[in-house]
Image (tube, rainbow, N blue to C red; front, side, top):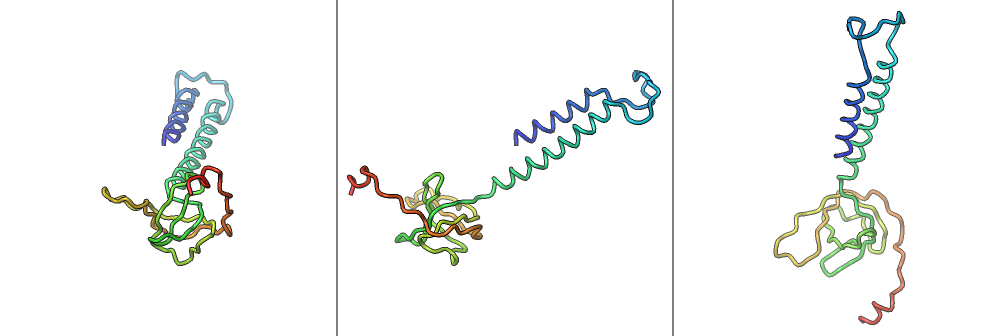
Length: 150
């Protein structure tokens, strides 16, 4: 959001100080040329670039504000869960889970359910749809640290 405000304010700042003046402006020196001045052309170009930048920033912000998780699906005593490949956080899955199979690497779209205060379970992710299935999860070999714990 800060990026959007910065782009808009830079566009306004540039437009204000480019020296755009109409033909009736007494402070504008008349050169006898026909058409817009260089300042007006630059201001229009900056306005177009700012509009494209704002549109791009809004699209990126909207895409990132939606919850997507990429990770491996596994079965637990409570049902299906997913382990986020990036953060390694585990989420219980509810919602549209009929297309999810244990052992698959998937990217799903949905929303986080509010966690109950006294709940000791993992966070709950409500699946709206499966964005992509990447196939079987890769199995990472156990490290010496995990072998020592067992």
